[in-house]
Image 1 (cartoon, rainbow, N blue to C red):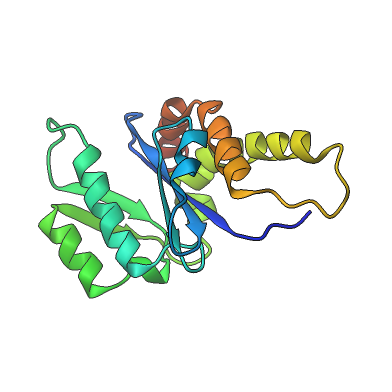
Image 2 (cartoon, rainbow, N blue to C red; image 1 turned 90 degrees about the horizontal axis):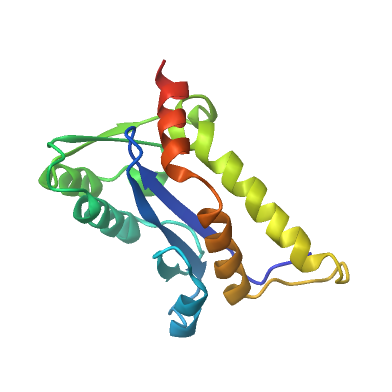
Length: 177
């Protein structure tokens, strides 16, 4: 199996089970608007040249994160994340400060132990996504490419088949107890 692109998925939620819709990051310069019809999660879909998070997009994600949170949640907030290079910039710290978000960066290679999403969320999601991919390619040759619309649809179906609220709660409990 091969792909002609890369897709990153950004997930964010809280210890009490509040979950923000995902962000799908595709490779490219622009989003084909028709891709939005394949999403079933309320996700945002965007592109970067690499299909990975970059500095500008992460600053935008901080703003979206702050906008999605219910008004009754007290500030400052604590955001736990990996030490990805796009997260560690003065502009990111300044924006987080402006939004009253305190950033906690986990050290490299430690997220599988301490990051709530890695502990309880992504394993379930990846398992469901692999099952959808296996169904799609089971009757195909070894040289099968998944188109972007199918990737967005499978990712959103996998997302909707996970109990993210409960998984976030379990992830925080498993990471910090």
